Length: 344
Ligand SMILES: Nc1ncnc2c1ncn2[C@@H]1O[C@H](COP(=O)(O)OP(=O)(O)OP(=O)(O)O)[C@@H](O)[C@H]1O
Ligand SMILES: [Mg+2]
Image (cartoon, rainbow, N blue to C red; front, side, top):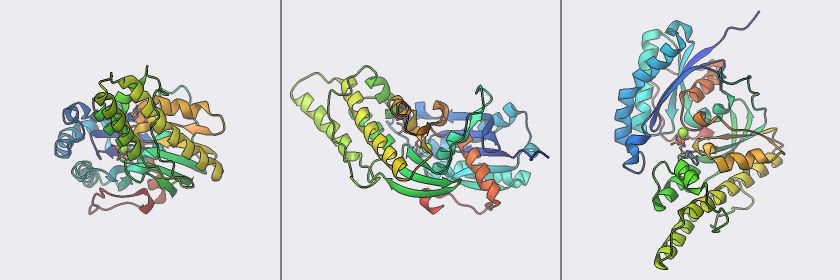
């Protein structure tokens, strides 16, 4: 007898993307939609929290309706509603959370609060019918390199939903380092894609930027690299030389990617990992993707570009794993803006 298909409606609103998706059995994306606010926040050089939450209010129900309509489904086809509970901006999280609660109340569907970082990890499990074949899924134990706008962590994934944090950033997150460095190079927000574009024709060996190695740990520190770029820019300006943004961007990118690569490979060796799973917005970076995919020691899983940054499918995929545990949340669930993965 074939098992019943489980469909989860995933809702994400932790930062500046309002997103939803319907995911089957934790992997197949039936429909998804992402409404991004990037163009609105560009003028501020970063996410303006109050503007973000008001945009989520405008977008959340249209986005959910869109995925339901695209899937030609009604709520009787759905088994549970998963929603990002944290970490993220409180005012943004609350909008997705309240929408999910309203739907749960109206439909009687169970509610599941999801850790956004757990969601990012599960981006490597999803696929859509546009894929030619069903891609394989990561095997355990796996080393997760989670590199996003607010987080940079090295995690041992022992099994589904079982995490051991091995280390992480002591200051800026990798994405934050890209965003801040882009700003000081005069490039627009978000900094990751801008640096990648600006550095595409630059010489990655033109400058050497100091990256703290933190030997013997899986910790990172990115504030030094950022300062190192700043000092270099100041010196170039003082000397009246031309600011070679392409070379600066390429050299910065290489420094950050090298340390991420080194730590992840080291962890994978130490813990006999079967795979490396890369997650979070910085996993969209071409230099990082190429660096990991060029090595042949470990099989590496990196989400498709559209699932590297925030999306609803990753919340639906993580929601499925939580659904299988049979633990649900009540309508009294509150958002957790500082919820670490280690305390799920
Ligand atoms: N091509 C790229 N190269 C490098 N960084 C990138 C690229 N694309 C996006 N990023 C970075 O990814 C970050 C956004 O990722 P994501 O949406 O996962 O972060 P977030 O949701 O804001 O933070 P968190 O997930 O930690 O709460 C930004 O810092 C952005 O600069
Ligand atoms: Mg994110």
